[in-house]
Image 1: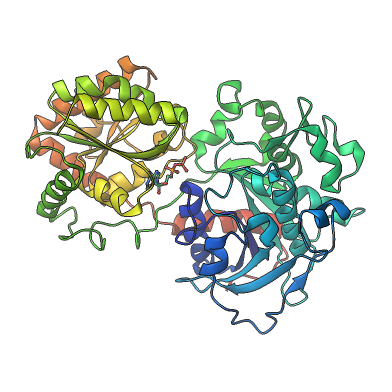
Image 2 (image 1 turned 90 degrees about the vertical axis):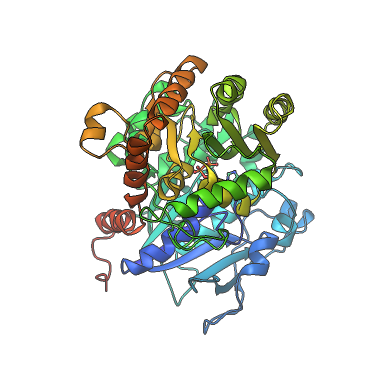
Length: 498
Ligand code: ADP
């Protein structure tokens, strides 16, 4: 089974959030599950520099059919943009990189639309994916093209268009990592996408007068997946459907949810290079050391008995962190400390910095992106806070489980699918792994925090929850097998899996 995995970020080369972690871990897991996987990435500097030199026989640049004509030339895009081939570090997976410096050789956030050309550059990327699916590389043609998020939404549509009449040569899977980011552009971009006029309509990619790449993926892919079973149900309803629930309901028969996994080679306190003293569920002394180190590093007062709450997150409204900021002072007066690492919406960043200013030694806030500190917080925190308003999957609660940072979560999406609340029944059955609350309000969060403090007053029970959490396994093998079953249902005549 040959699968082309199409994504715009990939850990360790480039990561802005969960998509990077998933893209770094799922393709190797698919290979373990027997797939012949290759990855397609845009040539952002970190990717261009990080992909190893070609070890493939046919490593020469592959010309792409020209899609857009003269106006692309005026932007410095060559008439036959090149796909280069190489290998990924660590996994050694074969990868194609769309090497168009005029579009991708830019520093900073890969999705920043500073030059107003996101529609065209990600359309070109999707076009490259479709060309590969259509047989561009004579040595390797995928049976399935697996696309991820709006940046790749046009690929299933292009594949269908290329194949007309008749079915596309490769089947398509489109995975939604976050329905809130839709790739919506003004109608003026439509003529530049190389699509027939009739597709700018309600049955096509028009969305309230705009062009929506997310809608393109949802309308045209053979299968739609999202990253947890609960989110797959939630997005069929208006509350979480971000305006696309109608389309998703119409296609409900092909929508499913597969919970993300964790790459335990990267996220495990038993072998985490960031920790001076590794630990596991049966050697929790090391966690006390990590807590002391975190306090030192973030300038928190040494109060070994104080509960230490951690946040590692994009600072956006989605993540429910305005609630955390609103109760931060109370958290301190209840006896807790708070360590926040994040970057995002400036007002939220400022609000957290002010909370830290009001509570020196008790609240520490670091604005920025820091992979090492993220590990240190997972290891040092007693509780990891993930009160997201909505959460397609969420990875930090999964990391928290493994590091014995008991997750405190709003019971939605993947958070509902991965954290078992500390009810008396769940505690009796030794199933409880965290604290889940339902009411998305400061009231709801405050009540959940009280439950955390109450629980910690019973060290033995706390230890039980922590150890149960740490013993959970969400490795990628299970999800990879589910994706393979999905691919098989689409390409039943593909070569049997080794
Ligand atoms: P999302 O993709 O919505 O941002 P996820 O929970 O799925 O949320 O994934 C977030 C990933 O990004 C995790 O690996 C988390 O550790 C990481 N992360 C988020 N913010 C930061 C930050 N400021 N510094 C380092 N890592 C971060």
